[in-house]
Image 1 (cartoon, helix red, strand yellow):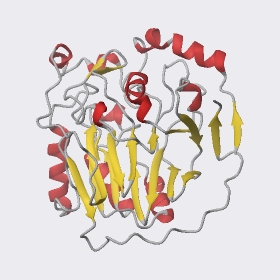
Image 2 (cartoon, rainbow, N blue to C red):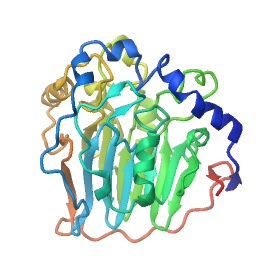
Image 3 (cartoon, rainbow, N blue to C red):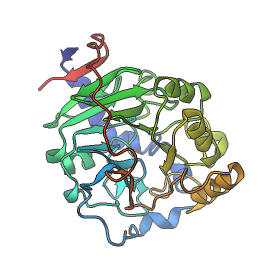
Image 4 (cartoon, one colour):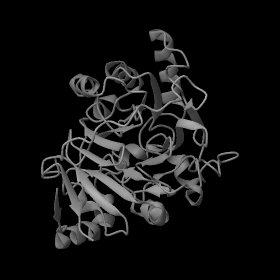
Length: 347
């Protein structure tokens, strides 16, 4: 492990260019023209309210619970640990993509978070405003290789993790796994930001959770991950944006491809994410879910295998009364990773 200073002049240049670049480059993974297509009315409306939002997400008897907050933002409880993925709580991202539904939990009600992960650097996954909202609750942020330069100096630690490398604290282990996406943020940086996107696998007390972030369908990526993690309990997989397919296919799975990825991973349960939250495509509201339900029927997958949550819904998958109530004994500590595996931020 080696400690490095972030390249401060370059980082400041990126931050200064954010507003200008967001108007001319990909925002929320698509162009402004495509966002404004069939969803223009949502740009001037208020986000739909989530009824009876959870105010106490900690589940004392839960071994594994998932709360879908919206888009790629989930709160994962694994016994006494809490993990937050791609936190976005703002009403819009990139100043152009409008939230359709309010976040599934008020960020003030989040518990202290043991580790937060960012899958890639796009505005709808790395949200500075959202990180500022929850900064006091965060202990550790993990980003993909090359992503550290995009993260301002917060009070929590920020580390970048290369593919197949791991960050570990006690028995909680987080591993970066391969996906197919793009890592640039501002458009001007796409020529050299080639590695700053990833999926993540979380392991704790014998439980394993996969988080896909954003990805196109590449069979080898999912099968390689399955080979290294043969007992995935839950796969959190994006199912949108779908349209225009010729454009989206390069970087986003559709519901059919997401289900195939679930099968490739060999996971027990799939929970779909990354749909019906922001104006970020030509998809009709509810379309991704309808297509997914059709794919489930075609493939004979019931609601026990593909569990579709509403934004703000929390699902307890394992509890202390389940057959998996007793945690597996902690594994021996792994050897120290190579020096290039994890790059730590300086404080």
